[in-house]
Image (cartoon, rainbow, N blue to C red; front, side):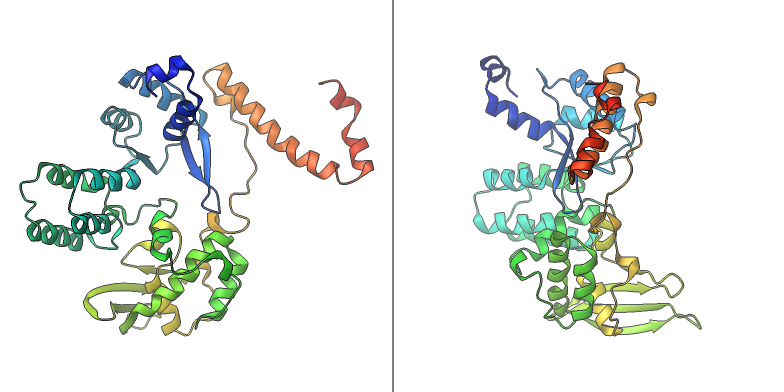
Length: 355
């Protein structure tokens, strides 16, 4: 936040800053969960170092798999130093905004926007980028060159296989359906749909149903069995685009499915290719190996383990103890409020002593 806004006490700026600088995760509905936020007076390396260090302490020094930022170079330097194993991604919204601000040609804007989320391999992505640059004569454009040099931090193709709470899957099915249709099991994989509805939260079911619709774009060209085992390899291609192909595997020992697009590994939701394979194999039950626990209706329910003993400073320990107690108290209040007897039991002498 700019210092002049701080001096004026601009509440809106403060809220915007918290949104930008907050450390977030997601729940089993893909909803944002804010873990921490900080208001700082400047954007110097020492300040960001303090913020990230305190965040890691509060998270019991557990590093996130992926961090998304707006591309601030100072922040990037701090993240490399304090979170060397964490994958750093640039916010897709900021990249898209920068494209519209720096590229005047609307057609080029659209093509570059597709490069953000395209389900390409790295080689396919590089070829597609080269075609765009050559077609529109962008070889000497300094902004395009700078964007290309950062491609491994913003293009979806370079993140396949790294779990990032599912932005890609939501984009792929956007416009194909709405939540109003979530209770209709009307596809050719009706049993799979019903199982998915019973297993996953509504938001995740919407994505899976969208992928079931998308599967009709693909077909299994051939299936090969490995020796005397029951392991299978499937070769798939896209209708009217036979040059685009994928490979899916089925392991008969553990019942696991995998696809060369790495959608499930990236997002925890099966890709349209695997759903196409399920139809090809006439599978009528949603495979357990394709269930990501964090997206299920009971996902994320675990006992909070107090970590105050490991906290370096007393304030962090106090906050953790308060949070743990509040979580337990909230559940107790809900249960005790269901009856007069429960209420009387809750207002006990032991509790009164601490009020």
